[in-house]
Amino acid sequence: MTGYILRRGGQSLLAFVFLLVLVFFLARMTGDPTNLFLPMDAPMDQRIAFAERHGFNAPMYVQFGRYIYDVLHFDFGQSIFQGRPAMDAALNAFPVTLKLALVTMFLAMFFSILIGSLSAFRPGGMFDRIASMVTITGASAPDFWVAIVAILVFSVSLGLLPTSGMGSVWHWILPVGVLLIRPLGLMTQVVRASMIGALASSYVKTARAKGASNRRIIFLHALRNSLLTVVTVAGDQAAALVNGAVVVETVFGWPGIGNLMISAIKQRDFAVVQACILLTAFAIFVMNILIDFAYTRIDPRVRTT
Amino acid sequence: MKARGMFKLLLQDKLALAAAIYMVFICLVALVGPELLGKAAVSINLRARNAHPFHIESGWLYVLGSDSLGRSILARIIVASRNTIGIAAGSLLASMLVGGCVGIVAGLSRGALEQIIMRAMDIIMSFPSLLMALIVLYVLGPDPINIIIVLAITRLPVYVRTARAEALEIRQRAFVSAARVMGAGRMHLAIRHIAPLVLPTLLVIGALDFAYLMLAESALSFLGMGVQPPAITWGLMVAEGRSYLNVAWWLAFWPGLAIMITALCANLLAGWFRIANDPALRASLKTKAVVNA
Picture 1 (cartoon, rainbow over the protein chains, first blue to last red):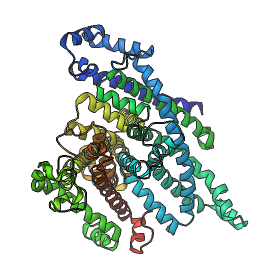
Picture 2 (cartoon, rainbow over the protein chains, first blue to last red; picture 1 turned 120 degrees about the vertical axis):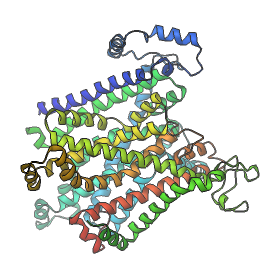
Picture 3 (cartoon, each protein chain N blue to C red; picture 1 turned 90 degrees about the vertical axis):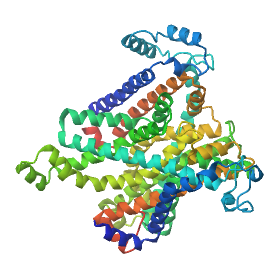
Picture 4 (cartoon, rainbow over the protein chains, first blue to last red; picture 1 turned 135 degrees about the vertical axis):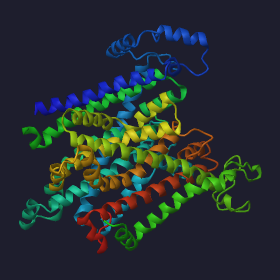
C-alpha cells in the first residue's frame, strides 16, 4: 500500500514540477517577460527598471534558479494592481473556491448515487429515459450560458435570488446549481452503469432469493460497490470542477480564485495569474494524494498490492 | 461496418436521424453562411436598434432581434457558426490525428518511450484544461491557430491512451504475428495493420469529443481568451450580450441556445454512433430497446 501511495504521489509531484517549469518557460518564450507583467501602455523606462529589478536580463539558468528559489520561498512577486504579494491575493481567494467545489462535489455524489441507482433499477424504464435525457442535455449546455439564463429567470424576472456576490444561503443556490450540472450528469451515468453490473451479480441474486426488499438490495448491497466508482470519478472530476468554477465565479461575481485569475488576465497582471495557476496545481496535487489514500481505504484489492 | 448498413440503421432511429440532419444542416450553414450573410451581420441599422425577437417588420433577418447597433442576431449567429464549428472541428482533427499516431507509437514501442509518453499524458490530464488553455493563450496571444493547438493538446491524452490500449491488444493477434513473420517492417505494421483497426474506436471517441471541444472553445471565448472581436463566435456573442441582460435578453440567449442545440445533437449522434459501432450493442438499435445505454 505504501508503495502504491508513493508511486502515485510521485506521479502527481512530477506533474506539479512539470507545470512549474512550463509556466517559467512559457513566460520566457515570448521573448520579453516584461510585456506579460506590465500593462501594455507602460512607459519604456518603467519597463527597463522592471526588467532590471527582476533580473530578466540575466542568463536563462540564473533566471530559472531564481524562479525556483522564489517558489520555494513562496515568493511569487508583487501584484501590480493590488499592491500586495501575488500569493496573498491567491491565498485569499482560495477558500471561496474550495468551499464552492466541496459543496458541489458533495451534492453531486449524493444525487448521482440516488438518480443513478434508481435508473439502474429499471434500465430503459420511464425514470431511466427521463434521467438520461436530462443528463445528456446537461452535458451539452454551456455552463456560462446556463448561469446567465438562470440569472435572467430567477433574479431578473422572478426576483427570487440574488444576481451575484456571496453572503447568505440564497447566494449559493445558483452558482452551486450551475456548477453541479456537468459532474452530476457524468457521475450519474457512471453510477448507473456500475449499478446495472452490480444488480446482475450473484450476491444480489442471493440477497433476492433470501427475500430482501428492493430498497435493501439497491441501497445496501449494490450501492457499496458503486461507491468505489463514484470516488474514482469524483477524483477525475475535481480538475474539471476547477474549469467550471472559473466560469461560475466570473458570472456570479464570486471572489474566488477563478474570478481572480480572469480579472488578473484582463488587467495583464501576470504575477497573480502565475500564483493562481501554481496554487491550483498544488491544491490538485494534494487532492490527488488524498483520493489515492481514500481509494486504498475503500478497495481492499489496492491495499494488498 | 459498411457505410450503407450504417445509414439504414440511422433511418430507423428517429432521434439520431434528427440529430444527424441538424448536424449536416449546421455544417452547411457554417460553410456557406458567412458568404451569404457576411454583409448583413455587420450592417448597422440604427432604426432597428435593439429590435425585439419575433417581429419581422424590418425583414426576416430580424426574427431573433437585433443588438444595440441594429445588427441582425440571426445573421450574426450564422456568420459566427463558421468560427465556432471550425475551431472545434480543427482541434478535434488535430488531437485525433496526433493522439492516434502517438498512441500507436507508444503501444508498439513499449519501453522508455512509452513510459515518457504516458506520463506526459498523465500530466496533461491532471491539470484543469481551461486553466491550461487560459494561461497559454494569455502568453502566446489568442489567435485561432493557437486556440486550435491548445484545445487539441488538452484532449490529446484521451486519444493517446485509447490508441495505445488498442494497439497493445491488436499486436497480440495472429494476423499481426503472421505479417511480422512475413517480414513486415514496423512502419508497415503500424500503418497497414494496426491503424485501420484503431481508427473506428478513435472516431467514436472523436464524435463524443466534438461537443466537448465546442463547449471549451465557447467558454474560452466567453472569458475573453478565445477569438477576438471583430471576429465572432457564439461564445463571444453570449459574452457581449451579457452586459445587456436587463434590457435585451435575446442578445445572450440565442447564441447560447445555438451552442446547446448543436452540442446536444452532436452528443446524441455520437451516442448512437458508439452503439452502432459496437456489434454487441447494435442489436439493441434494431429492437428499439435502450438507445441511451
